[in-house]
Amino acid sequence: MNRQLEQECDVIVIGGGVSGICAAIQSALAGAKTILVERTGRLGGTLVNAMIDFPGLFHAWGRQVIAGIGWDLVVATCEESGQSLPDFSQKPERHWHHQVRISGGLFSLLADEAALKSDVVLQYHTMVAGVEESASGVIVDLCTKTGLKQAKAKYLIDCTGDANAVVLAGGQLRIPGETQPATLSCRASGYNIAALDRDALQQAAAVAVVAGELRPEDLSFSPVTANPAGWLGEHGNNSNHLYGINAVDSEGRSRLESAAAASVLRAYRFLRKQPGLETLSIDTLSAECGVRETATIVGRETITVEDYLDGKVWGDALCYSFYPVDLHDKNTGLNKKGLTEGVVPTIGRGALLPKGLRRLIAAGRIVSSDRLANSALRVQASCMAMGQAAGAIAALSSLQGVEPDCLDLLEIRALLKKHGAIIPV
Image (tube, rainbow, N blue to C red):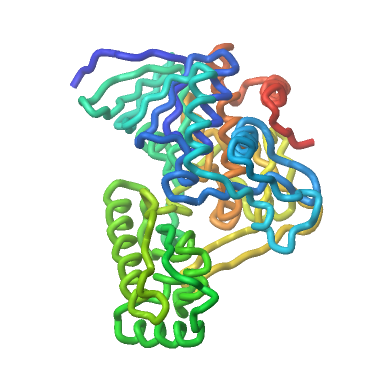
């Protein structure tokens, strides 16, 4: 079916999560006419919709390694709300002590404001339905509330988290046989955790698991042992695991969300029966599951776990990443491997460029990488840095008429530095 071209621009960004926000703002600030397409009514992605509102890591070994557009939004969120930042000069006892706890809702509002100030055109409640490359650009079919509409851009950035645009354009993906589990977060209240009998709770949970009323992972990252005290201590935030479903497509995502709803309901019904938890309530349930892994692109270059742990400085490096290898596993619950002190991994342009495609760039957790490397690269600060890098590449390519892999690296790096990013040296 032929559709009339309704929008034309330099750059289209698909996905308004943390990578997409940074990509779109950077592109627009560079002078490219930019449209940001987001399937929900809010910017922020997992940070907002899945309530994983503690982005990191921006600092490594006593120095800042990721800054720029995403970091500025995090700082602005803290300043607006009167929150203080962690003391990054001190080595944390645990890596997550340097994650920045923020208001996801406020972050979303500030991201919307920043996008509009930079002249990004925001298109909410819209999903990508088709992508076709041509010699002069990319034709994108967009599914809106009133039907399919067509837009054309010189370049498209896939920040969907699932590589939806890349696969529609005919790009290659790596889809693991077993993905990391997802998590459905909530905010629970109505109890005094200090007054609870933790041993009795643990015993009751074990009995409920044997009876089939509860699964260990409903209240834990462990597939073997429930941890009700841990769940209650976190008030249900980022405290469960949902195994065995890949949410790369709508069918998988639907199965996941239903399984997640059943899991939280089992946890709620079990906990409300326990002494001291009779008035437990779930005040807020995240709008969707937090998904750790679905697919990665096959890029011009692929970051391996050896590259990551060795801190390889790619010749075309555009940003740093810093996080432990962090694989959530159905057999062991959680496998972590920290970086050797002083090591800070990098991400190169080649890992953002899908192999075989000329007009698409990818950023965020879909970056070309093996599973173990991706388990670290997928976190929010790294995704922000990748998004900004992708936005710079797309803008310069569209304005200069030069394909992404032929751009002068010095120009890309200069543009990123102009907007606060930290470039590997």
